[in-house]
Length: 122
Image 1 (spheres, rainbow, N blue to C red):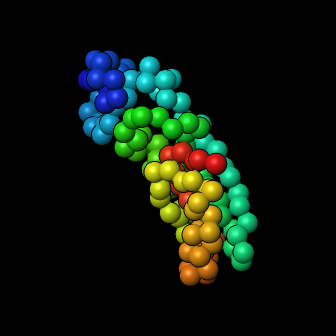
Image 2 (tube, rainbow, N blue to C red):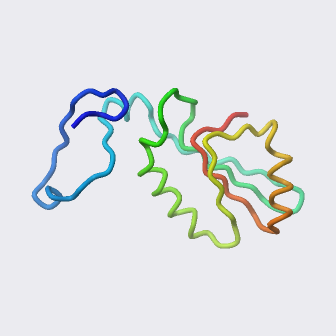
């Protein structure tokens, strides 16, 4: 297989139990180490509601983030089970400009907001 990020060939060890399972995306171990996933949570109090921003990467990388979609889905499944919140998806969030818009959005929905993003700019 070829890595989706660096395009180098690599081999993944498989057992007999998962030999015939199809996997959608592959990233080599070197790219996982080069672009480490570090989940951070930032909590903000809006006027009437709360906002939780969950970012997957600590830094902004010049890669296609869609290659990490499996990790993204696992985090979303955990967040979707929280009651009383709406989950939003963004590639990146800039809190210096977007905080007022999030306040307006939360007031329109009448609900707390959880934002899942690849990186958070402060």
